[in-house]
Length: 151
Image 1: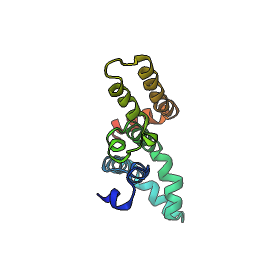
Image 2: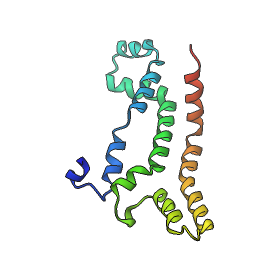
Image 3: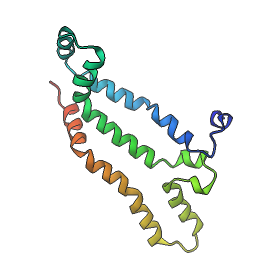
């Protein structure tokens, strides 16, 4: 109802705006990861005269980079593989996402399915996730390794 009243139905805005704001799981994960940052580092930076913004960018962000990378991967996978929101908000076939198009191929060709076309589209839809994972693989492994051990 809200997106309809805003005139966002059949636009990409209902798919983009809520995702930018994050979700509860992402916030909770980053909060828990921030508890691993030693208070002594922040206090030492305050004593040295660093501002809060400088402390955040030069101390906190490098320490939580693996957590941010892991959350980025999970966020990207959720957005890329989202099926429900595009079906609800996008009506015109030109604006539908790749996952909705692949699902429609199964329905459209119910009597004679074009399996090579469907499998090709599925492989193409996996490529961006694979590329993002390969880029951030080291950070993901670091975040899993660091969150599993207690100091």
